[in-house]
Length: 104
Image 1 (cartoon, rainbow, N blue to C red):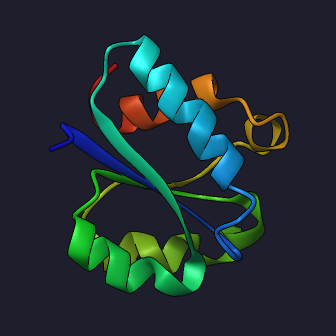
Image 2: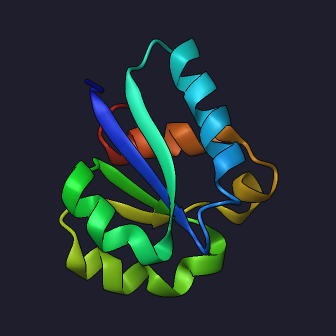
């Protein structure tokens, strides 16, 4: 069982898949036991309820859902920085998730 769960949500769950792989590789390199996965924004309610994530990160294309999701869930919710998302910088995104979880 993972120590922490990180969910990335985007429009269809596809564009974040490559970023998830990079984040998983970085987590392993740092010796972290994290479960990191991507979903579509339409799955957020079900996946948060069933997976109890420690943080929810949103792709820039679904930024419009940020305020609603912050009110709905009692976990950190943040939009991934546009530059990190565009460059698929798994290290920066993972480090930000760790800060939000109080791990950094």
